[in-house]
Length: 353
Image (cartoon, rainbow, N blue to C red; front, side):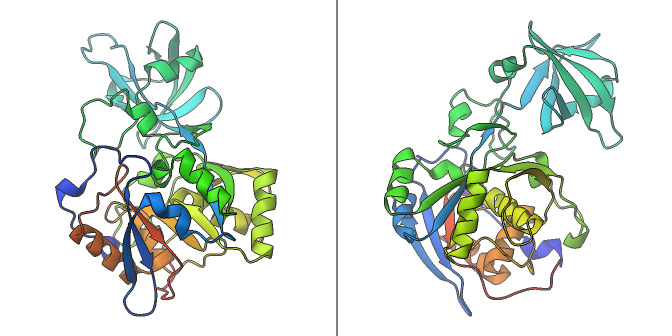
């Protein structure tokens, strides 16, 4: 399976630069089926009514940390040193991307503020710089900057992005990017969903840099995902198992929920177990879904692992047609963009990757 099978042309003006008003973004409803998929156009304000009372809605309650930090210049340097936290190793230790990495050496101390510094523990051949924070770790929340994706064309993030780039149910700190399908929700919409009888289950996957690493190989089978940490509580596992036993449909909010659920059900041999683990699952067409029945998702970058996952769920042709329809109808794309609700899994299967 070739990377170019997941390519498309997007007019630049359809890349969302500003967050949609919560609860008011546009929502394309996609029904995959043999032949042409069916499309409806609605507002996310009607999402609760799209769910059946027996559905189980799964949300990712990870909280984005302000993962871009700037250290004071060292030696003859004139500019600050940029660190992007990419993966947490333990409470104080992080893998990072650093610019300019060539000026940093193992054993260096870097200072981010009067009360927060870090020791450089390691520089790896792949460019990763491992640091261990020293001092007031809570200072990261004050001096750090939300790590907005590069296609949001701002030289610096705004103060308002700290909350705009965060779901209303964010709780467990640790992500370096938002689970963006969740950005559309308001507390009122969640209340209306619960009032319909839909069970809302929280899980956690801390979004890491691996989700957004570009696929550079022509044959997607050669791509490898970085591991991301996830957690499923005892309560969440019990409610998900009850849903499977009762044949209730599981609705995943975003690709992060899909990856967590499909990883966990495999680890538990068909059941969900309370767990804190890691996943590097790479979902491409031909994948056998065991947990997720319906999917809410944003519109993703061409040739990305995210559009490959959505294509695995709905079918390659259905997603191609859906994206063409979204472009024709001038939906906004990517993190701050509009969304798509896929009502059921597609039936067409490609050769497994």
